Amino acid sequence: MRAVKVLIANRGEIAVRITRACRELGYPTVAVYSEADRAALHVLYADEAMPIGPAPSRESYLRVDNILDAAKKTGAEAIHPGYGFLAENADFARACRDAGLIFIGPSPESIEAMGSKTESRRRMQAAGVPVVPGLTEAVKSFEEISAFARSAGFPIMIKASAGGGGKGMRFVERDADLRAAFERVSSEAESFFGDGSVYAEKFVPSPRHIEVQVLGDQHGNLVHFGERECTLQRRHQKVVEECPSPVVDAELRERLGAMAVKAAAAVNYYSAGTIECLMSPGRDFYFLEMNTRLQVEHPVTEMVWGVDLVKEQLRVARGERLEIRQSDLAPKGHAIECRIYAEDPSRNFAPSPGLIRYINLPQGPGVRNENGVYAGYTVPVHYDPMLSKLVCHAADRGEAIGRMRRALTEYRVEGIDTTIPFFTFIMNHPDFVAARFDTGFIDSLLGHADFARGPADEATVDAAITAAAIMAFEDSQRVQIPTDRDSPWKRAGRAEGVRGRE
Ligand code: MV4
Image 1 (cartoon, rainbow, N blue to C red):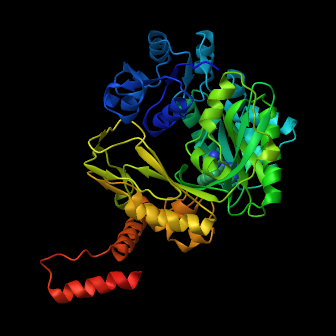
Image 2: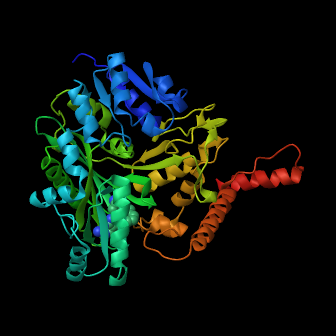
Image 3: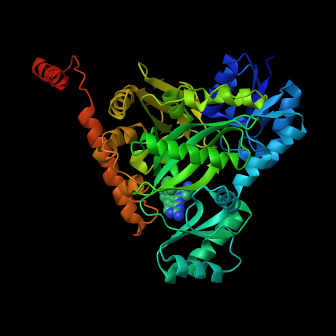
């Protein structure tokens, strides 16, 4: 098929990642950038680059008119939205289509169907996909929520119909808290999403977040690439993802995959997408929501299942039929991803923007960096502070953890703080190694559990204790490099210490 010029309507590591896939297919690329991103890696890497506005996202990366104008000026024929920004904006997908451009993602209709939590729950229920027990229509009054709580029993979750990813939701444990929670979620939903409608679900205790990768073409063919374990989250932000899940066996994987394909088929899905589920400790799983885009954590699936999801997106966007058959697919090994953020874990993950004076990325067998920065680059304050993703793949989970520990020791960033020490701490935490965790694990470690209560200073104290633990652990791992100024005895002792660790 002839090459098409692709405009990547995103920034950072994912823009670089998409540019790579385009380059491998021989497609010319156009980067777009805000004034703050003039020297960003994705701009340097693309074949062409177009400015789309001032630093604030709402004046640049969210400006549909500026992005379409850049496509027109450069003769781009396709647009890849990446994730975040406009990736799940049905109006943007429609505007691309109306401008005669290929939107590298699903149809606007699929995006819309899955954009409303109540609509998606209704569609899933009709398709025979298990949903979290609860309402499938937005309530019209407090009395409806109260009636639901009485019939279902506490605890419940009140959620915004237009919400997702943890925004606009409240855990309610008792009747006395119900009205306040209902009013809070409604007003937050109105201000966040411009839609104050809410519904309720039965609370699923100690859940795991298990998500299933699907890929469809425009001819009704759909396959799945198994599950990802995304339970390790901090304040609803995924921090460590892995594939496969340590609690899913081949039989459960087959059931999860069948459910995901059925869910995607129910909205005539094509391109890459992810079905998010809650899984109870008893391994019951329930549809939570569908992400109608490529996900941040897609590389762990790619490394285990041997697929390039972005290339597949580019192919199906042009109308090509899937050549992959489900029977050809099987997972191999285990992959773990750590999201490297410009944040200081010893200061409660305070953002740490600024000039990267030096960076050394880990290498070696089974190590993949999805990186969006370089030495000399200044991390801007305007955007999500994720710098890159470190992904390690090995034959099994134990070896993948060991490889991640080794890779993290090689990872050096000078000039700003990063979350690297936090991952060293996690990779050595006995509960992580034993896969003994649920969605509250990280927040409880740091005292921010969504359902925990207690004064803020308790959380700060916990954060300080955790930071001290991270730093103490890091010191214990630090190799003492002998220096000429040291006495020969001290040098000998240190050298012995290093040898002793081998
Ligand atoms: C839930 C739940 C328990 N029961 N719904 C959080 C973000 C959004 N994806 C939905 N979330 C949850 N919904 C019911 N009925 C627990 C969570 C939840 C969670 C889910 C997945 C991963 C991390 C989480 C952290 C806190 C709460």
